[in-house]
Length: 314
Image 1 (cartoon, rainbow, N blue to C red):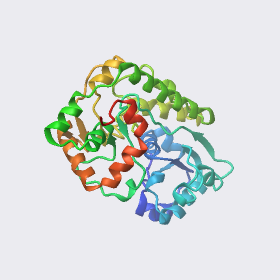
Image 2: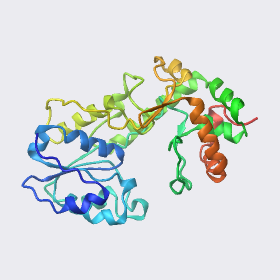
Image 3: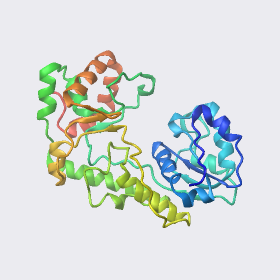
Image 4: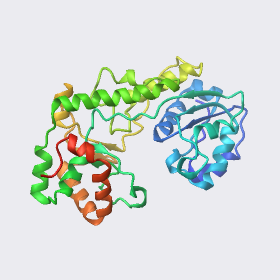
């Protein structure tokens, strides 16, 4: 296998001074793009042609990272990118802004930001002030709306556990959510090279670990499509460890029943540690009690979902 260069955050300046006869391969976008870069770097055929460079996900980039990232893009022979809006987080990190720096000879392959809530409909992100709040373990950066609803109702201890454990949503609503989520993903794909929505069928319990972290079962076909679009594939598939399994959310019984899937995981896994629902619930309730503004933002941002899933306090 060819030499791989891993470059991330503070290491960017060091990596930017490295020279190679091979053009650079840059995967640009969110944590999914990082995972794609790591997978591509495992292919000998890719390394024979490119120097694979790993850069931070756009949401992790700091102003001091940008010059080195731009230098890598300016040397790129292949850019695999997700759509990123111009001026992202007030910085020149948009996909178009980066491609303006790329050589005219660079091959560009685009794929969508993969978001699918069908398997985990109760998970949600909270944006208002969330990036300014430190999250203590084992609290995760995903907000389970059942936990949010329990906190908003003022439930604690056994009462909260019973509310969360007994909660079930309407099967038709869960199926409709999965269909709508797949349709939203498909709607994004009219302007990218790699199609992902079709890979959601047949549905399996292990396609997504969370709403924005696809498993290798989904990522590997995406990488195959990227290679094909870049004129490299098909190539032998190497052995790849799971890339985005930092947080594994359980598949709820009502969701699995609605989608016709087996109940395989009933607890959480956070950074390799198995965590019971009740333990994570208690940690989140303590967190929300210490962060009432964040809880209010969660209820405000996801009021429609809370009502849709029947979680609104009586």
